[in-house]
View 1 (tube, one colour):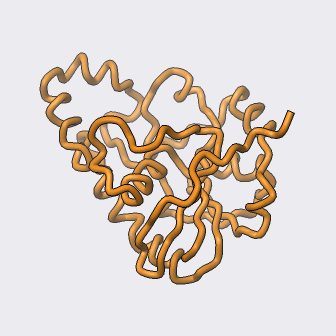
View 2 (cartoon, one colour):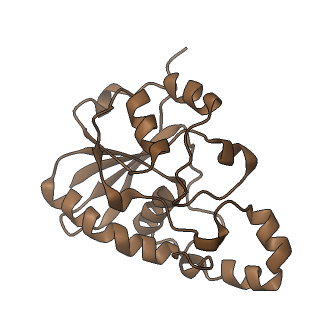
View 3 (tube, helix red, strand yellow):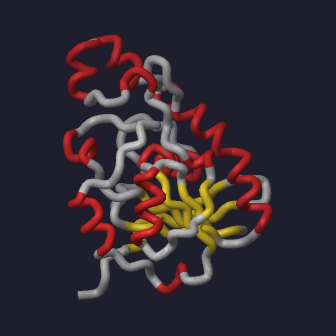
Length: 197
């Protein structure tokens, strides 16, 4: 089993405004940079190799956490939200009404117009998870909320309906065990990145 630690990128202006980012390459905002710079990677992740989504907000987060040379892994990019990028979920619910409700009730098969579903995101991640498990070298991956939720859904066999099986702290590392066939199981979620005060 390989240990995989997933860390979400710091905040952007679109995060603060509640706007969907997806593949939109939004940089960290100043508050996000300050928050990430104050975090501390725990010693148990010292021997891990680092990978990052190709989006700037993830690469900058990796750099601020001390790993500017993290390997860029294209498959770690956020879920594609298509025509909905830049909009808020609240606005979309108001605009689309029952159509949006029916779409959200599809769980893993929820799909933005012109974008990808969480299931398609899981399919994209599948070969990477197999490679990760087969190589048997621990990895930290700096990525996105959608990616972390997709991996958690695989680990818990969660259909992405209702409350998630675990409430995730987005200023923490989430550790999973990955088998050589890419099968994922929870290892230790919410490993704090906050320095001891």
